[in-house]
Image (cartoon, rainbow, N blue to C red; front, side, top):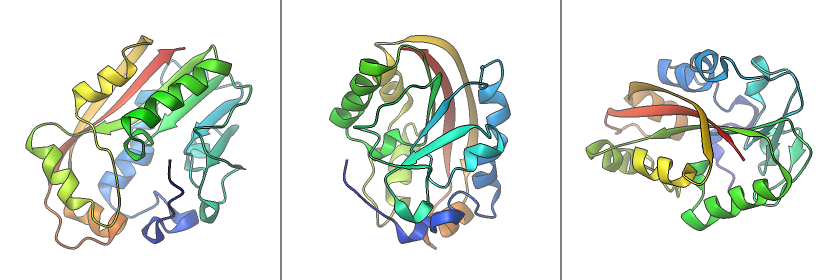
Length: 195
């Protein structure tokens, strides 16, 4: 994975943009996705940026490659290892190529025998193309629902939830300073797997 630091991420203010979609993705969906999951132990927040997951899991440890976000652990998640009760991978997979996704899960499997919660958005059909066009000034590897399911196919799914919504122009103005974005459909999934 390349070391990429986006000025538009706003460092410590990442995910705190004042629009309904940011609130849904980074905060409102968490009650559903964390329901019935034991979060009392040592929880790794892979790609945890500025640690906004701590609002729901105060004991979570954010692991991120971007020093501007001041994560608890400054490290590349492709090479990171540690002793955790639960690993959460939230909005990270679209930063990784297919090979890097496999590398990530192979690395996790080498040291973690527990559960992993993947929280990831997908875009299907025309929404996939619109997502790519709206996401200016960044390199991403977006996925449709089938791609996400195929990525997780080697693992046993314990729990799966999803929320569908419309991504607004305001989200892209706040997130990427794109003032010409088009609205599109999107689904965020919360999938708990066993390694």
